[in-house]
Image (cartoon, rainbow over all chains, first blue to last red):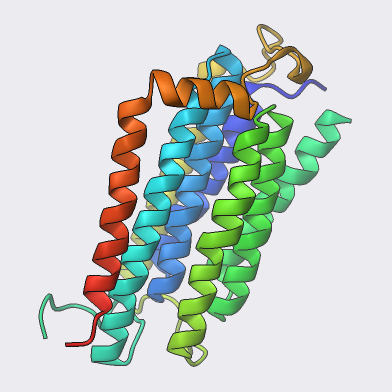
Length: 101
Length: 168
């Protein structure tokens, strides 16, 4: 059975959906951030698949930039988690419902 | 052989992704996140993207996951008693939204490309654009400006993270 474009895209779609489920369902902000990483990773998989299918290197370069954005997002996101924890002693997103305290 | 590798890697990736969002203990989630990222790196290798696979291991499974573990240890969070949102409407809505999204994405992936299309899929040995050389050449010629912008973005993120966490 030959593995083609749609197989990789289907895997990417499932991982993305799992990530969305994590963001929507979980209350722990650290797990929410991990779910966002899962979604970015699924998008990367789709980019590399299309790059392979079209024979162009551009898709892989976009993956490089997505990784840069993911690293920046995690650094700033975890800094925000740190100060929120310092002020509120919680990582629960339901408890973080004010912009200023 | 390639098909077998693909199925094993994708099964491990999907299973560990599901475990990331379903484990109660965030430390377990991080460990399963590493498994998921490494199996996606193997999928990148199967697609002939060697440089991206190496980057995935170094940047994601190395730096980003270490950052997560570091913050987890720093916060010393007790094990959650309630992991999901309390509102039933919210939970039900989230599940319905996820199922609809999954159906849409699978429909596009299957119908848009053709499930068993045998056309124009060059063998991994036949492509040469996954190497460091070819990516580097493109990156420093056609995508030079975007590359510089990405470095500025990283600088901004570093300064921002330090400025946010600084004790006043």
